[in-house]
Length: 506
Image (tube, rainbow, N blue to C red):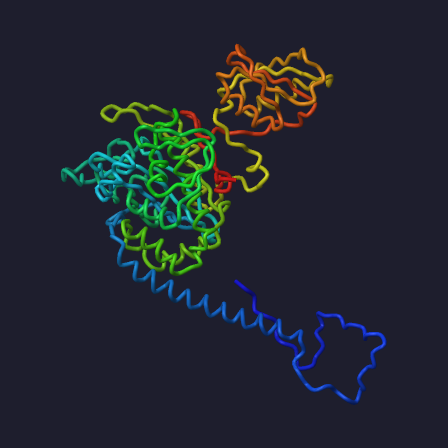
């Protein structure tokens, strides 16, 4: 917000911020007893002009706030209401900040036939939840923390009445996304609160239609991928590099589960990356400062969402004001820590079992309104995204210099970063290398690129028959190994906490 201009100086008073100019040489000076005709000094025009601009902007801002309130008030009537908190008892104590349970539902019955064919949305709607996230807005409105809850998470429901059959159920184990099918929003909220011990303040349900419209009205989102992404089930087909996705393409991106071995965990990371890109587009495009554009975006979203009765005009305006202060680095994303993949449950099948101690620590941080990501920017910026996890890459280090102990240093640094080194560095046949070289078999090129990211400035050298063990010829340029993390987590690997600026296109 612009600061108020300083008070104008009295007429004819010297401006203390400007030094007096010395009199011009050779020019007669005016008499002390005669004054030139009174007229406004030239230098006063700028402050008066600036004052008029500030005044005009203030009026515009005030008017915009009024228009924005009127617009949002009218849009409030378009929201379909649900009551997920009805008759709920023994709920967790409220923490600091605001917790929103964001649920993504199918809703393909509202998609046009052309869009169904184009974006592979065929089949009957399942009326299920594909996405479950907790969005925490900090009390100071300057940070948003997003935690993804895998839909196949092992869960135990409280007693409830099945919405479909009307049968009374006692507490029993299910997959988390099945809570919606059995008991709708209310059972979903109750189950999430029981698992996280977090009090959910608001409930927001988004379907395919609102998702696609929101992306399109913002003009698309920018997504980057370190490797090609192709999924025959959704039709996703992206080459490595940056892409601008429209609403339908973005839906393919966040729905795809068959582009890597990480399945749902990889998909959740893509969903988080999409949200970061969406926040980046919204905060950089000026939509939150333009009441008319804000209206268009809000109308696109609210026309096909369901929300609790308390999520109304004031909450929408508070959220809009909060996001005006957001930047990509203000948002942080993670997935609840997984302790066991493929946890078999009779009658349910394979589930994901949470790592209870780590999950409890994560949700305690949300309850206490604490950031999840490291606060020091250098810690975050030192990590590079790669295609293959370092734990899957075998490395033999050789010292290619006359510097004693360099091989041990490089081996130790790579091992500390998670690479599977032999622990027995050797002496290279090529001495006096100034630049570190990575020797690799072309069949393991993705692993070689991942290792090269950990050794900035290194040279890649393909050698047929090298096999799965990559060789590092440590050169004189080695200073330190950079930390890397895989673009999509391997099964059983915990998801790191990422800030929005780490996952956006650079």
